[in-house]
Image (tube, rainbow, N blue to C red; front, side, top):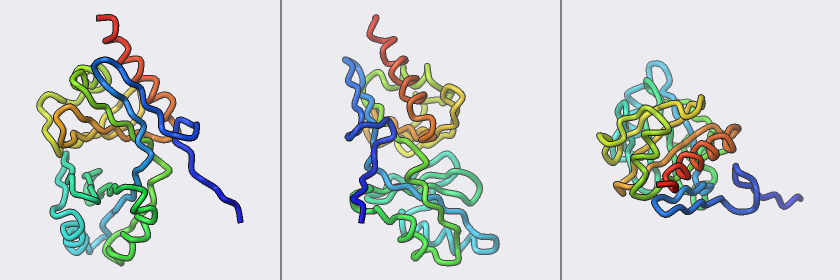
Length: 189
């Protein structure tokens, strides 16, 4: 049997961390993801399972920052669930067992790249990257937006200087370039 191990979206053997004076941009490859879509006629039962899992059902524009599982609203009767990959490698299978016929569960771990942007310049960087009202957002706010023509999700985390960005893994290099270029533009000041 082959001994295969996953590689981070940006390549290499470990996730990339870029440190600047005012912000750190880290590739987070320890995130298991699965999407949940309530089945027609089973919406209430699906929401009941979500409440059991997360403590509350994430409303539009919101995330439930629960530990170890967290989730955010993606669209009508659709949510993304995330958890540490180390402890939830089979997240989609676990959710399928829990939700049964109330929802369709789809493995998403390999489809997304996650970047954590942390530091005092995070709001300034975010304002240059996308059109979300970052200064009005509070912990648990989640928005779908476009960053350099890529559909992304941004989630305001508990720490006031922490923003999590999920983007398409196939565009990881482009998204990383946009983040780094924007962060570097503050180095000149």
